Image (cartoon, rainbow, N blue to C red):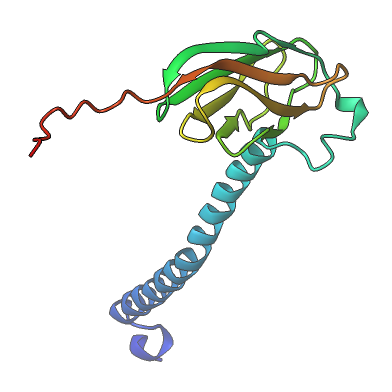
Length: 183
């Protein structure tokens, strides 16, 4: 029996080994090409979904009395002073969560169309503060005394207050056009 027939040549073994190795590498690249992006997507989604749940008010925030808390409003009535008709007035109300559960401001409704309000939509943790920001457009309505309100709803044991602001709107200054010529 000759050596050539009984055992494969070392060159042939090496080339077969290299071919199977490159096939396996190509298969691994294909698997990684599909699995790695999927794995990254799952990790990214799971990280973001936890944050969103912690920041947004639950659907039953108004009725879930087990998660009610208490709140202290630092200012419920603001007098913005005197403005000229046409000016916009920015008003800021602050509150502190004095309870031991997260506080949610889930509804803010100005009493009229001359006021636009925004508020802290994330959970206000115990001991932390939140805000209601309002902008009053003095272009709406007539000059004179202004008394406006904003209804606020929170997940609290104590009743949510009605935030109010007052002030005076003066008429715009008359334009003094003394350049008219008489004929």
